[in-house]
Length: 356
Ligand code: NAD
Image (cartoon, rainbow, N blue to C red):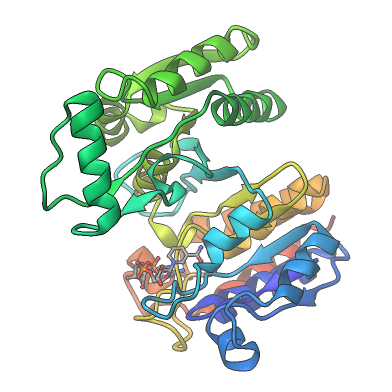
C-alpha cells in the first residue's frame, strides 16, 4: 500500500495511523513515498512521477496532508492527484463518537462531493487581463451582459455526465452501507443552467434508486438545517464548492477537523486522507490529533474488504474516545492534553483486547 506521510503534521499523524493499522494485524505492507515539502527538497517537485507510479501500481494510498505551495509555480498536490488519478468522488463520513464534545447527538452524515467540475475546475480569468477584457466584450456583444471592468471571473461548468457519475456513486454507496436517504443540495433557482443540470440529472437518476429515500434541497436551507437538526441527515451529495464548505461544516458538528476522516475515489484508484490540512501552527510538536488519519486508514481497510480489521479499528477508536481520558488539545480536554503518540498507543492497547 502506498503511504504518503505528507508534511506539516502529516508525518506525525501518518506514523500514528501506520502503527494502529499494524496493531490491527491486517497484514498491510507499506510503500512509503515522499510528497509535499520534503519531496520538493529531495526531488525538486511536490509530487514526483514515481509517487504517482507507486499509487497506480498499488491502486490504493493512505495520505497525510500536504501544504499547498503558494507562489512557487507548483500545482497543488491534492488537485494533481485528483486530476491525474481521476478521483471524481470525495467522501467524508461525519459520525459523532460518544465522548467527543459536541452540541449535538446522533450525528452520522456522509458528505459526497463531486471533485472534478464546478468553479474549482480552474477556468479563470484574472482581473484586468487581456482575456477578461475579451470575455467582457464577447458577453456584452453576444448576450448584452455587463461585466464590471474590475471583475475577475471563475467559470462554473456542471455536466450531465459528471453529475450522473457522482449521483450514481452516491446511491450505490447508500445501498452498500444500508443508508436510508440521499439529500441532494443545489442552488438551481439562481444558477439555472449549471445547478439546473445538477438538480435535473440528480432527480432523474433518483428514479432508478427508489429503494433509497431521496430529497433535493437548496444549499443555503441545507446549511440552516444542518446547524439546527443535523441528526435528520444521512448521505448528502453536493457539487464541488458546496461540498467543500458543507463537509467542513459537518466536521464541526462531530468535534472538528481532528476527528474527520475522508477518501477520494475514482474508478481505478482510491486515496484515503483526513479532511484537515498540514496544520503548520502545531506541526512538529506531537500535539496533532491522529484520529482523523486513523479513521481514514479504517476507511481504507473497509475499501479493501478487510471488514473485520476495519470494525476492530473503529471499535478501538470509539473505545478510546468514549473513555475520554486521552484527548488531544483540539478536543478540549479538562486536564493535560494527550500527545499524538499516546492516542495511537491507547488505540493499540484497546486493540489487544479486540482480537480479529
Ligand atoms: P488546517 O486543516 O491545516 O488547520 C486548520 C486548524 O485546525 C488549525 O488551527 C490546525 O491546528 C487545526 N488542526 C488541523 N488538523 C488538526 C489535527 N489533526 N489535530 C489538531 N488540530 C488540527 O487548515 P489550514 O491551516 O487552512 O491549511 C494548512 C495547509 O494545509 C495549507 O497549505 C492548505 O492548503 C493545506 N491543506 C491540505 C489538505 C490536504 O492535503 N488534503 C487539506 C486542507 C488543507
